[in-house]
Amino acid sequence: MISDMFEKVTEDVVARLRAIVGAEHVAVADIEKYGHDETEDFWFPPEAVVRPRTAAEVSQVMRLATERRIPVTPQAARTSLSGGALPVHGGIALSVERMNRILEVDAENLFVVTEPGVITQVLQEEVEKRGLFYGPDPASRGSCMIGGNIAHNAGGPRALKYGVTKDWVYGLQVVLPGGDVIRTGGKLLKNVTGYNLTQLIVGSEGTLGIVTEAILKLIPKPRFNKTMLAPFGSVVAAATAVTRIFQAQIIPCACEYMERSAVEAAERRKGQQFPGSAGAAAMLLVEVDGNDEGLCEKDIERIAEICMECGAPDVFLATDEEKRASIWAMRRSIGEAVKALSAYREEDTVVPRVKLPALIEAIHDVSKRHGIQAISYGHIGDGNIHVNLLRMGLSDDEWARKLDPAVKELFERTLALGGQITGEHGVGFVQRNYLKMAYPPHQIELMRQLKRVFDPAGILNPGKVLPDEAGVSIAERHRHRATVGGGA
Image (cartoon, rainbow, N blue to C red; front, side):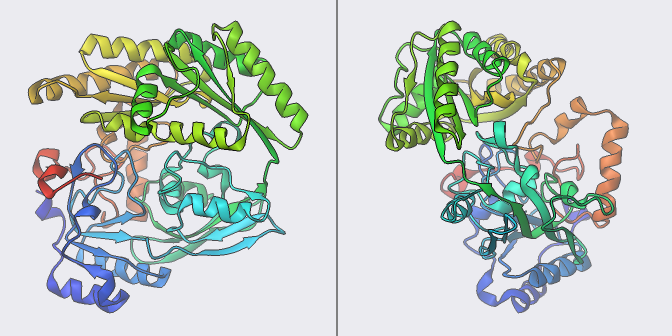
């Protein structure tokens, strides 16, 4: 039972937490929002919320939690789509929201030093004021935080050209579960001194340590960009065009896929239309950037030609910044628009780019065979497709009976194409028991051993990543958000 694995948060523990961070930064009431992230309709309430301001305070909280064997769930903006920020065992929700300073923009060495509670878009805009550029660009950049990006190795549209979060993290300050504080890496482009603990922490989903400071690489901001939309009569034609773009030796900074139902959901939500969307089975949003405007124009023109050769009846260029911003706002609204349609399960499949047409076909086949509506969109340029399985008119019994077999078949077919079960959302809580499909037992056991080295008491973000790590039952702890008066 859960109660046998961990201790409860007592009044004495609350008093000690208040002594560490200040009484106004510890809460035990009106904390419903800390019980959910953006994952389906899960709600797991913590017993207490603590909002530390410094690494020293985080360290003291973790020492107390280890001493009393109380589970701690690190939280940033709670935009996770895999349940990574859910306090599935109650305990303490440790929010980094007050650790929200950009500490330094080092324009000479091209690094930024930041705390984990900084909103990603805020950091991007701050460095861009100085002609600099931070590449990772999650779709939720206006609300997600750097700490959560690091925990989940976030990607986004620009990952195609500029890589994911790990490619920009060069140093970290981390509080370990027992309270020790370590620093890894630094403002160094080359560093092979010992094991690469920086990259071990990135993507570990808050299970090995709590990031309290990060050193992120910057580059000069590209001066020009060109953006276009291409509608296609079939989803396979759109996927085929993507592979042809790369065969032409062009690397866009973004290449996004949106099938008809995703486009329609966004159009309804925003009250406007994508240019050229009428009658299209799928659309590609493609952007190039660089410091040579003529080369950018040449590349976007060649991409337009390729799209039309693959069946696009026309292409639509964003001729000014206002139109470009409007198109991207529409694209970034798709996730919320689709999720507003119904109860859902979002999967995060990724395959080698050449296998994209086969993945698109597999998604539609699995949806049809299991009688579950699927809506797909995502970062097709790097092989990453988000698949939303929607409950729609299914009864509770039908949804419960059909969902898991559909997910398993989708993963089986993705793995058979040389892909993986998650490209950027992480394993978290909802995918942990599918990890056995992706890796053999001895590899999962190696991960368990690594977890035990960092967290021998097993208190930091338990019930995440590893299959049945803590034995939590959804039926035992899960409550629907509607029972507490609303959604995310």
